[in-house]
Image 1 (cartoon, rainbow, N blue to C red):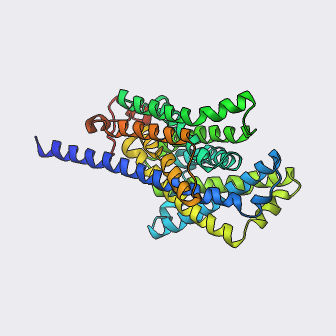
Image 2: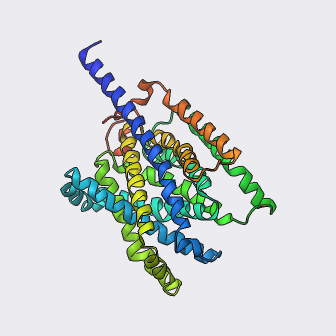
Length: 359
């Protein structure tokens, strides 16, 4: 074996290994985020809202906006510490070529996915919200395959299908109960879970399109800059008009010490989970990065169980174990199979060759 071949193999091995490590860190931090994400619903003014669709939607919008601001502040500190603020400024100005992908992804990741997740938390519960979005790798992997020819091997497809099976185990009892009229009437929470799964899958595909040429820390900060702009400039003002100012009153009332602590924890856990998520995409691909990050459902069950001292329902536990099995199937794929994941022709190249996963 030549030195060049050995160096190339070692580089591929390191790239793939770090891709899985970053995706797993994302899962741990993402699972931890559901603790402050759930706890804030039990604090004033959200614990006293009327049980109406209007008030639940308004509360979810306010919480999602505050969550986005908390994450952006954490990312500004992170990028400043890394000395990348100048790069952030240069990159965000490249709207036509680069930043547009993060601004587009923020629409699906924020007002759709995170908002949907908070709806699911408020209507059904934190454990359901955590596991409900487990189907998002199907969306992300499918879009990445169609859009820029990211390769999905048979083993990867099997792993994703197993993960879907785990998601169905989680969804089925609640959905059947709602359809037969024996449920709790929390249909909006189930819609929120579907929004989360769809939104995060689409955002991953948008991010994967840009992260081959953008630093993940910078790209993520641009993504949350876009989301905060959407909430502050557009969504919250429209919500305030539609609610006669009630949304602004709720926002002001929410800014007390306890909520600020939960928002600080939410910003740190969700911000750095997103950092890890974005770092995994160029190394192992969108489909695999999202699938391994799907372990967050299991970690969320663990963290929520510890902090609430309650055991989740049996279907949540079974679904979580099935998701783990799907992740193991994907992780144990041969490294040489993972080396080539993109088609250059779909990324703007002129040949049918492929980039390496670590490029």
